[in-house]
Amino acid sequence: MTRRRLSLTTQLIGLLVCGLLATNLIAMLVDDKTYGDIPPLEKKQAIERLTVAWRLLEKCAGCDIDALLDGLNHGQASFALLAANPLAEHTMNAGEAALAAQIERSGGIPENSVRIRQSWQHAWPLTSLAEADSELTAVLRRGDRWLTATQRTSVFNRWWRPLLFALPASVLPVLLLVAVFARRLLRPLGELEAAASRISQGQAIAPLAARGPREIHSLIEAFNSMQDSLARHIRDKTHMLAAISHDLRTPITSLRLRAELLADGPDKAGIIRTLLQLQGMVDEVLTFLRDDAASEARRHLDLSLLLAGIAAQRRQMRQPVDFLGPLKCPFTGYPLALTRAVDNLLDNALRYGSRAELSLQIADGHLRIGVTDDGPGIPDEWRERVFEPFVRIDRERSSSHGVGLGLSIVRACVQRHGGTITLSNRPGGGLDAGITLPLTVDAPAP
Image (spheres, rainbow, N blue to C red):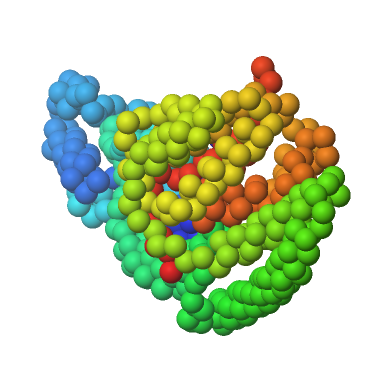
């Protein structure tokens, strides 16, 4: 199965999007100042709990402190009065020191009496898309004892939140600019691709307008120059061969008239037969050259009806040709070219076999015209060479008529439709010639 290739525009857009995504992600991870911060509401509640506990202890000198602290405990916070400082060995970072100072200011607590330690459940911000859990431990010195408050809070784990704005803000304008300019810059390449495809189908096209960046401009100019050189070369060769073939008609006709004046006998019959073969070869060359320069108009047709008509005409000539195919098959193409291609294949099939079968199949967006026979087939090494002009296999298989242009004409007709032709030997004997055509041919003929 052929892998579908992405267009250059799609690859450019994908590359830029990946680059912008990676840039935003790296920048966010390097400079993430929000990770580890306690949400403002939870921070306020934690400070209030701690200052309330402190004030209660200050005002209830004769109270049962343990019972008082038990009353303050709940699922998110626990309080205890300890003889030793559990954070004596802990060095506060800048965030913890700022929070400790804020607690001291809010509760009227003496300076440097509060120590804070904040621990996270997740040490790396990419471990979760949700908020992470944090344990906030605050220690307040009260005489020779330490009020310890442990509260569970959540912290911002919003590594992905900056991307909600940064990505659309950075990617969408770039995508828009790249899509507009890439289409503008690559449009000449698309026209060049379409022109090359039409040339490969044997169609003549007008020179392309050279535009776009310097490299594409130069490429189109080189393409136009190459097309002009090829057309001139083909035209000169065609004219030369046509002139030679046409000039040969006069001496052949003259020799045939002289041969008619000879006395009847084996020599006269042999000479006339040879001259007729020469005349047929010249006519075949002229037909090939004339087809090469033909400008038949493309039109809508019923391919099933066309092929069925060809088979019926052969049967009227007492040639065993059967047709198998759908009742209708709408198609846009060159009816004369298709008829000539199929006729040439049927001529070969009937020349080397006793019968021929013409078929039409539709599958996967393509048409397949098949011509099969029960002849000897062809060697594998000749499957491609037989399509070259003036190439014939061997004398045992080749007819004495023709110069080896039949299959060349077939391939030229098929390529005009953007199709292909292949030859294969049948398992039970015989040859299978298959013409594959696109079901819809959009490009009109010039």
